[in-house]
Amino acid sequence: MVEYQRGQQGDEMTIKLAVFDIDGTLAKTEECIPSPISERVRAFENSGLQIVLISGRTASYLAGLARGMGINKPLVAGENGGVIFNPLNLWEKRLDIIPPQVIEEIKTILSREFGDLWFQPNQTMLTAAPKDLSRIEELHEIIRNLRQVNDYRYKINKYNDAVEIMPKENSKGKALAVMKDILDIQSDEVIVFGNTVVDLSMKAETKEFLFIGDSLKCEGMKNYPCIEDALAFLEKSLTQSLTL
Image (cartoon, rainbow, N blue to C red):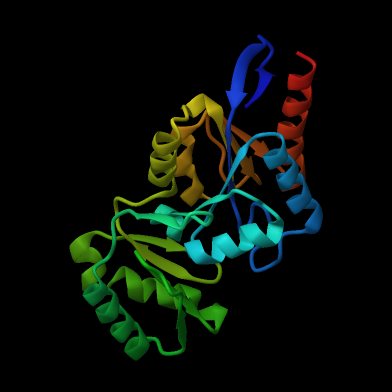
């Protein structure tokens, strides 16, 4: 358990859970997490924090990533919160899912109408990535007009390299709420690092939401130009706790 002074009033606060998005947060999209960043995250775990990796990538990918970072006891939430997984005991919880038959229908339509696509091997949603990234807007438009998407009111997330279709009830925030409940952790014991509007659903589950970049600004959120500066905020807080 890590305690530190929060704000100018010096209100005591306990941080137990540190939650990290991956692409655009811990690393640039499609790039490896730099070794110095992994080292700093390991230091947080060694200080007593539970580390959570959360992303649109699969839970199995995140489990492997955590191992590569040297995180000993991670929790991961893949598919933007659709799958929560503990790599140590293989415990898994899936939230809402898109029925497999609907997934196959959409894949068939996209393969026919768009063509050259790669589909992420998801459990709860569909992620389609065009091999020609200049066609991402075309892919997004096709997906927006799919009957299956509109009939079930699925959510669509567009990135620079892929488009996701996910159940409307799923979100990173919902996954974080589930993890908090399982671990008996309160909102003021959580710190979150993110960088896109998809991460914003976690804001309601924490009192310390650190946003990388300035593409989005809102009340109750701290913006940092880079992950190094955001990590320094937590490091400083932990250092201060040792002097209390």
